[in-house]
Image (cartoon, rainbow, N blue to C red; front, side):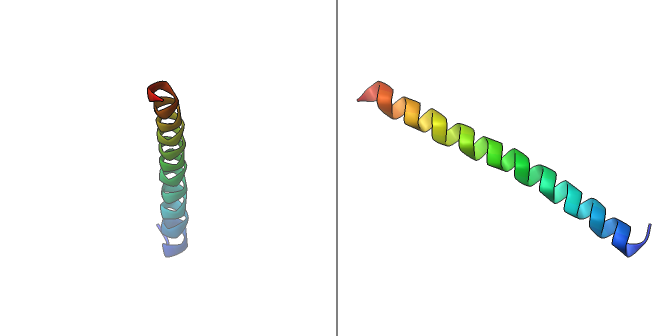
Length: 40
């Protein structure tokens, strides 16, 4: 594997994990909002 290919793979992996992280953050925020509404 060349360096550029390695970088592309790394970039792709980072992008995928970042997407997953974004979904987790959004889900957590939405859940927190719902939780606050439920307690108030």
